[in-house]
Length: 440
Image (cartoon, rainbow, N blue to C red):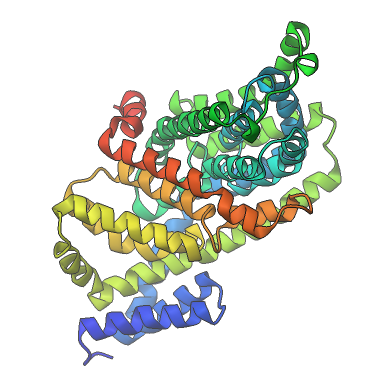
């Protein structure tokens, strides 16, 4: 291939990747395998030594240990029964408001996101617990489905976040700063979604009717229900407080979080050898997959640089009208389109080597761009046809809920989320205030 131009090589590279993905080859193996072939054709055996060196460097990074720990913590929390107690609390506090159960559900998603770090946990849990009760109370089907889909995606935005750990490993930015940057945008999206739900249910009461007065709880049950937030607040405070207070690294905080999840599971009398066994096996499978993903990422970035495609893409981006803001709009549009058909980790592998040089050349803060990137991945989780959350929700939804209902339910919530992206672009301090406060 040495005689081919960089333009032809780039077309062959990405064309081969697209072909194997369409044939159903897992993205990590398609990307890694093709990258190794092109790397050998350009650099010979020296390319393998370079790739092995990068992998060794990654394996010695202590931040990597946070991934299996956060996964294990999330699975334990899913089985601990904490979500049931939280929903009962939200039911008595918010049930008397129009749209209150939906707003309470997205608030639980915020709390769950701050305890876990993955997206599917909150979707499956709230789809099992909250969805049937909202439908039973006469909530509009699409209102309820969309609220769970939107809130469930915040697991990758509100720290701790496994996707943020991967972004940090691939871009070499501080995972602690990235965690801090996710809090403001996560709360902003919660406020925007709550305003949408509350406003629409106020204008159209049939969308989210309030509980009848005779079914609303008094102050006694409300105050007793607050004990449900003790364990979640304890876990969130320990994990995030240890990181932002400088008492522990993200990896050490993840280990503390696992201890908190074990304590919560024990207190709720759900801890058993079966639970530990199932959580351990699931953690092993996901961690092994992530190792292959890291290999593919390093192979791709090494081959991509060796082909000279990086400078080609940067030159092409220079022709996009609008300067750096035009380039940013184009990158977000690419992420939106990719999110419809690829999984977030795959998008990260393919786009970050292309986008990061453009981000740096444009003078954008990589932490700020990382938050925009993560939010667009969150949008990808809930956009048809292949958004993961859509299928998670279908798997636990009552029989009367169709895939068409789930697809159409996300449209207003995607619009609200994109409004949140625009706010973060216009007001970067939403994402950057806390990192600057905690880390200077």
